[in-house]
Length: 428
Image 1: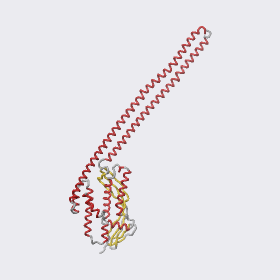
Image 2: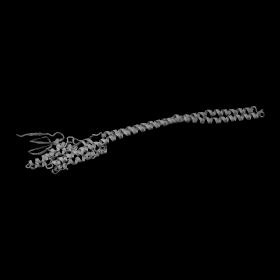
Image 3: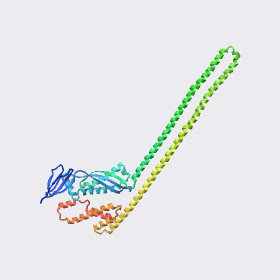
Image 4: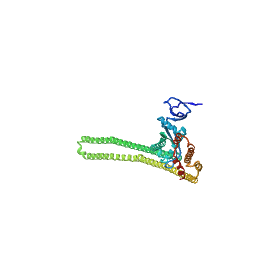
């Protein structure tokens, strides 16, 4: 009994099938749907795929524990049918989900290791984050290009720390902004008070100048009029009493002298009154305007300085607290790491000559579930299991034809020599 299947790929993918007649490729939009006998199908997406790379509990260069979530966009190299076939042969046993899981694990591992080369504060600015993205993309391209996987883009979705360091930086910046705002407000109030005091001073000087001009304009004409009247009176008396000049000469001379003395006294009295008036107004200006303005300025400067010192002291105190917490956290992590490494060395030394599956069981049971090296040990254990299964499989398929051997050898992520190095690295 024969089975024939109708093959019709979805948009954005190519089908690779193996049948008794050979291996073929069917692309959506390029070839018409076909019928195939006993097909074994592998679907290869021709469009780009997106995956999230999650790295939790990673340590930065300044020993701060952070969590990083990144987005990776990638695709298979599917320009020609031969490239599609090579891709299908390479990943046939894994399937598409297995390939995506491999890329996610590799990307998360590279993220975690690359975090240790950067300080947390550098990852917050554009230059440091751009350098991190470029370096991570370069490493992923170097690892995935030989497999026929193209890295199209990478970006950082979320970056969080577990000790509150980023919140402390934001709080410090907010405190600086508030301090600068208060200082600016105080300076504006001080400038406004000084401007108002200068305006009052100019207004007072203008009023004083007006009073002075009014005094000179009204009092001096009266004095001139009085003097003119006296002279006219003397002239009239001389005309009227010219005949009696000889008799009253002495009286007229004495009268003229008295009049002149009165005029001189009036001329002397007016400038003295003006000087006294100006001096009095200057004293009032100093007492009522200038002295209060100076006191207000000194009080405002003192209050502004005290407030700025208080804000700076609080910011320094909070920063010292955060630094001490970070140092204690780093010391605790270092102690846990040293204990886990000592436990692994002890187990590796005890099981150096034991079979590989005993070594794997010892590794799985030697590290606590919340230990700092638990993800690393899990990765080593998975690799050793994969190596053991592949080694056992080689003993079974010695008589398989050549194409099956080539398919088997196209899978490994690591060489035989690289896998043998793993126990040695753990024991050292």
